[in-house]
Image (cartoon, rainbow, N blue to C red; front, side, top):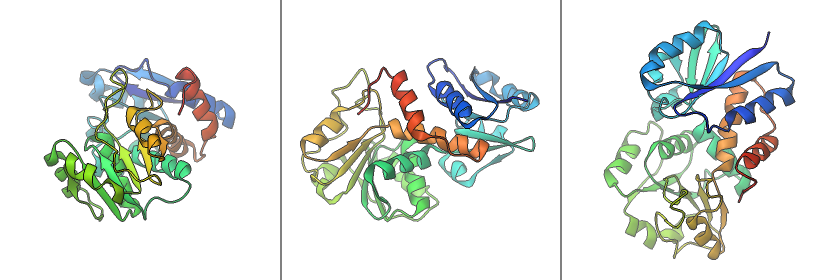
Amino acid sequence: MKKLYGVIGNPIGHSMSPAMHNDAFKTAGIDAHYQPLQIKTEDLPAAVPGMKAIGISGFNVTVPHKTAIMPLLDEVDPLAQAIGAVNTVVNVNNRFIGYNTDGAGFIRGLHEEYGKSVLDKRILLIGAGGAARAIYYTLSQQGAILVDIVNRTAEKAEQLKTRCPYPVNTSILSLQQAETTLEKYDIIIQTTSIGMSPKVDEKPLSLQRLRPDAFVSDIIYNPAKTALMKEAESHGARVQNGLKMFVYQGALAFEKWTGTLPDTERMEKIVIEKLGGKTC
């Protein structure tokens, strides 16, 4: 019997996940289908038991439901609970268990591009929103030694630090402090929407003092190369956009559903095709 998987959100028509996952099921020889499901916020409390009733085997969660779905699940993984967001749900013996693969997906993609572990490096995290929280908490959980945070609103950055349940050495910096001490960092991680299309010329901060051997990762993938990444390259630094984060968060969800990690290179090619062939 064909298994059913899906992604819930509102809107959902733009999602690249169905193409990525349906190809992965076919390639792995798994008889399953992945369906996008548009669910309004007010319908979510009824939709979750409805999906359980039809026997859905698992699903992804995207905006605006990542936090709202948590009290509707039977169990939430401790890391997802700490992050305050779920992006993956697995049906285990008719119990919905929620996970967050965003941070782990980012780190897997970062390790792959960086070429070695980043946990012993000095990291500067730009931003204090949902993506920053997932990345910061996961880096901390995995044993990162130093992750400083810069955000336009220092209070939000301070909350991110104080609410993290995992030990990590963190200082909260102003934009000016970050710009004037940038040479101390091995890796810069940009998690805000600054520089996203259509405002492609914007940057969250100046990289004037960036070391040429540093690595800059921007979770934006439209455009494929942000203004921040272009400036980093002008200083000789290596760069990465958010494509691998998107691919790996999906691949790790697939692994939780099936026990098998899919071909991530193939998944990446599918996403690039959906983006019109553009990649960094």
